[in-house]
Image (cartoon, rainbow, N blue to C red; front, side):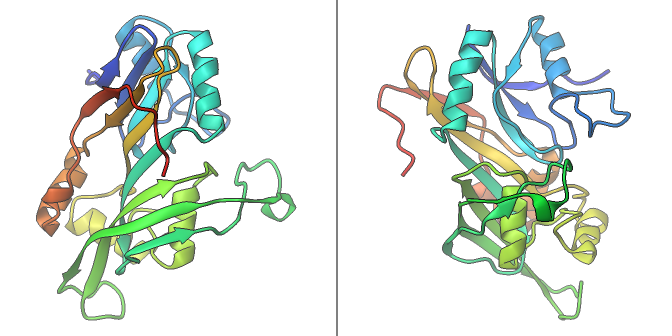
Length: 254
């Protein structure tokens, strides 16, 4: 029997949920033979229709918000389209990442409808900060030891695979990224550290509630595998918790 989804927040207009890693949000042409989707699981759990207003890649875990009616979905969808929602991610990357940097590499869309060379390059902006790092006395590639970093990531635009592509382009691929990462490091984390997944989690989301006008700030804990890894690396102080806060003050994206 499938475990119920963890609900982070719910009112008569919205529901926020912790999306597990590896679960597709909804049916698509890329779904193949998949039979389980977040949208259907949440609908069945709540006993009512839910409306997605933003997306998370299949391998990414973390907070997702859904509207409970079409009018709210339309208003909240505009909030995300107009970049009035603040997003916070945690990522484990190879190497010692930059202390603080803005990554502004333009990106071509990766939707599979046309060759990438025919797709226009679109503005993409991501803020990254190194929160911690660790050096392991293990040779994974040509160096006698291996270094990894915990990065806080805040995307200001919403291009497909933006965080993964930006960090890889900068030279710090996310562990577990099969397409943009490094296979030997991915295998090391899967086989030796119990993390056979993309180590990217959406841990924070803030936006103006489309009905009440209050600033809703959501925080999402990590799953068991990432939590254990953080504890092993001495990063427990950076573990987020499940929380939902409402404030009268307007949201600031600064």
